[in-house]
Amino acid sequence: NQPDCDAANGSISTIVGGGDGSYTYVWDSAPNVQNPTDLSAGFYCLTVTDGNNCQMTECITLNAPEGIAISLIANNPLCAGDDGSISLNVNGGTGNYSYNWDNAPNIQNPTGLAAGTYCVTVNDANGCASTGCTTITAMPSMELSLSSTQPSCGEDNGSINLSISGGAGNYTYDWTSL
Image (cartoon, rainbow, N blue to C red; front, top):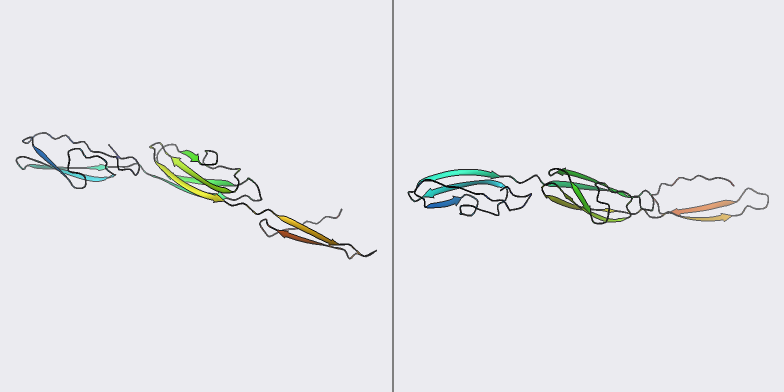
């Protein structure tokens, strides 16, 4: 039986016949029993010796399914709010994937996310799994502060002082007269 993913749960069954009927089993990389269990993927060779000291050697390869590799990219909100998203890339594994997020919809690329840490476990058709986490960072809220100086009577010398903090920086201004 082939092992699961990266598990050590494979086994090898042997059938021996002929010779004088009393056999010893010597594996190069497994317990010296006829049918070893709890094996990882790998190459195994068995030498069987009978009571007449006649020997036969056979080898077998146990293959585990390809594991899953994931990468997560957090897409932070453009402004303060719940418009963050996560791009999840999945490679390897077998068959269709299932996605189990701890606090997001169970889809590959969740959207509409608030700031926070998000963890996902991806499973494949063989039961192989991979887990990863990423953090969405909130954009600081933009704050405006206005102060003004009234124009002198009949003069065009009034002013407005605008102070901005938060947001993403690199502000643009669009002034209109009311």
